Amino acid sequence: MKRYVIIVAGGKGLRMGGDLPKQFIPVAGKPILMHTLEKFAQWDVEARLLLVLPEAHQAYWQMLCREIGCRAAHRLATGGETRFHSVRNGLEQLRSEVEPGDLIAVHDGVRPFVSEEVISACFQEAERGGAAVPVCPVVDSLRRKTADGKSEPVDRSLYYAVHTPQVFRAELLYRAYGQPFQTTFTDDASVVESLGVEVAMVPSNRENIKITTPMDLAIARSLLGSE
Image (cartoon, rainbow, N blue to C red; front, top):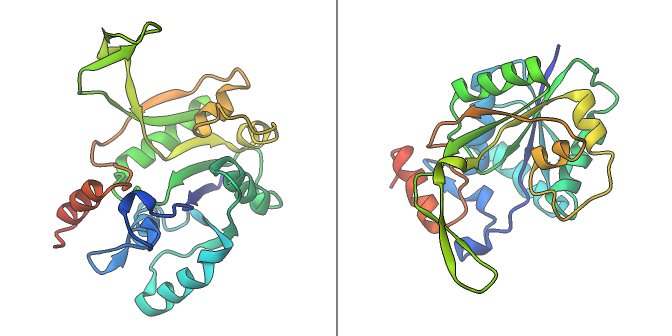
């Protein structure tokens, strides 16, 4: 059984307020994306990493790897119009080598703080049941907007924040991504669940944030001991 990780990095960085795509922002001497790749290489040096980037970003990324030195061996695939299409492109690039019993993870390029324990737990659960996602319980109080424009409280114990890596048996993920795109596909789990497949939840580490806003970036710099 081989273990693959498709890392998707298509962000334009608009919520950061700058021109540099968020995955390339340097933290502790390296782009965020490089920290993410190296986390998976540290977890399993034999894991097969595929990075999906927009074509316009690939030359810049390769320059960063030459100048800084990425310690994670990986291949490149070209991103698509949406995250769904980017993952599909990555799967198509791997199709000739993937076997039905293999496991494939899909991870956000700007989540460098997933723990090795969470990665392992997701792969183990996917091997048992076919599909697994890491989640964290919601800690804030929640309200739901009602049809009349008012709001009402909801039971937060029923809700979880979904993280990545989301891990699946290869044959299941290929079957799911053979479907036409739907706007309800917000992540890989939603694509797989549209087939009627149950997705198991695995506890995530709370540091496994998606670096999207300036506040997230400040947290990332703090976690990596960088000013």
